[in-house]
Length: 215
Image (tube, one colour):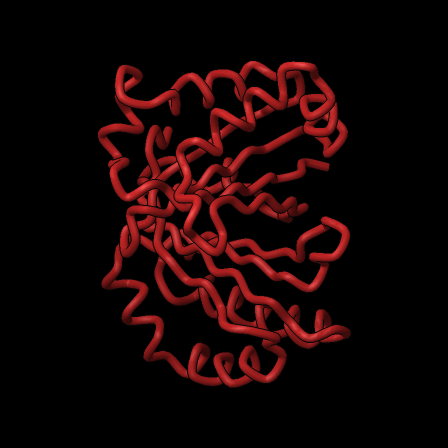
């Protein structure tokens, strides 16, 4: 099963998207190249937050979790991590988070015809609430399938990392911000929102990602 590793960086305030794209400004491009060259890395998508451009997202799809673990076991891995950490803001409460998910529909399976206005939604949940939350997300996915003629691609899963199993992630490929805003007014969302609040163990993280190199 494909395992998606999601890395969320809080960048230094001085680093912009153009800096990330420019190899002479930051080592970001070289970091991506290193990950993509690893055995078992099937794809890597990345982008920055639209509402908060200090947030950098990596969506790495491994053929299996063991492939990522093999990368982590390499002698060169500590240097790779140090280089990545150097991009982050050390004063942030969360300079870098890394979690793994077995997403039923990996990001690489989203339609390639148009770059999605990707919503990243993460919610820490109460223990033993996975069944209830899964039912809520299933109802939303049903609503997505009929909201527009082409449907709205989406996926969700709970983290598989020890100690983080109650963190639920959803990725939703909106056409644009107007489509997302319109869906927030539907009965499906109005009914789902309080159900998500009931099982929340903390505030959600909801941000749209400006994906780069989408193809």
